[in-house]
Image (cartoon, rainbow, N blue to C red; front, top):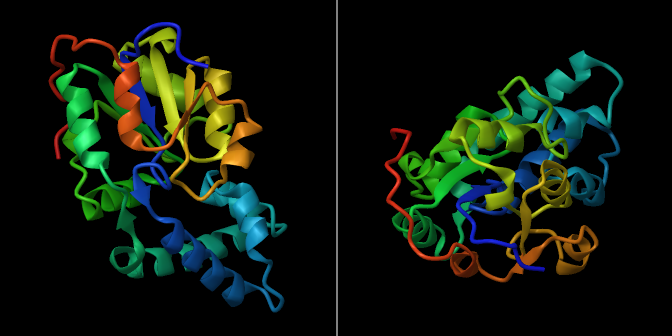
Length: 230
């Protein structure tokens, strides 16, 4: 399915969509599981929750808030220590974001990652925060994906409508949040989720490459100055 009108606002997930962080996340998860369990859960447990906030992911595995926080501390210590070594860039991401801005499209990030990690990931992949008009992270005091609240919050801050907006993501949680928010859903097929898994969520558009978004935004609009600094 295609959007019924040219898109004026594009919101992006971060991990697996704008930045290639699968190895970083997987290694941080495995390190945490080895540190906290005598018999670590297999990777498919992690993959089933990939795309949700870390607290929710780890909360499925233990019974108390104290245990969850201890695991979060272990995960973040490893993740931040190994960040620059394991994170990577996807082709054409920066170039596509620049072209979208040149067309006057409003841009945003809606991620389940905390603000510190979000800023670090964008910087490591040479993605200037000034490209985005809004960045919504897990630090916001709203429910998070698959709840539509963070997408609604981004649209509110952009003064944009769901009818002219899309959410681009690589996970089933992204597709569910986008559908619930009433935006066009775009499945990023370059992330860790398979095309079959994403197709089950019935995204409006399947994207083989990020630059494919350009065909859905129509003629250039008036240029939008960035609402953010570096």
